[in-house]
Image (cartoon, rainbow, N blue to C red; front, side, top):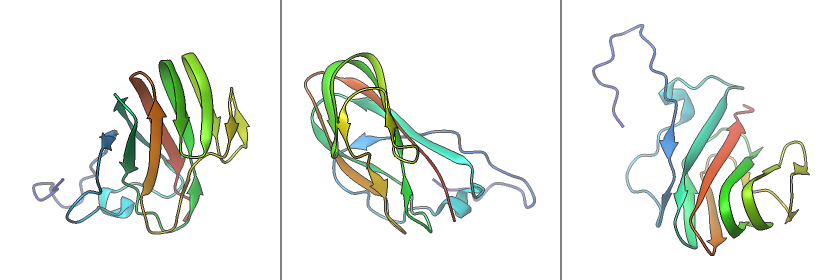
Length: 136
């Protein structure tokens, strides 16, 4: 992602970045402030996970932050250390509020100055949304 053609003084709103199953990204990972994401604002990463795979959600935050996960579909799903069990429709877990609509375990945490690396285990394709608020 490059923002070379944005006139000085103008803002760019990045509303969505897609989760891509597989290995770590190569090259430079943008810091939220480079993308004009203000402190305290919510960020989202989402996409279809078609099979059991590791995922990487680019974050690069100044402080560690718990995430909120939302899964949509009809499948048995585990994301990291949180097991949703059999989902039929949608289910969510909120690490900051310590609440879940179903399942058990611990919601993933994005550690300081890194990205979210976690495994998704599913028996059918599901839509996964990862959400957090920068606390720096």
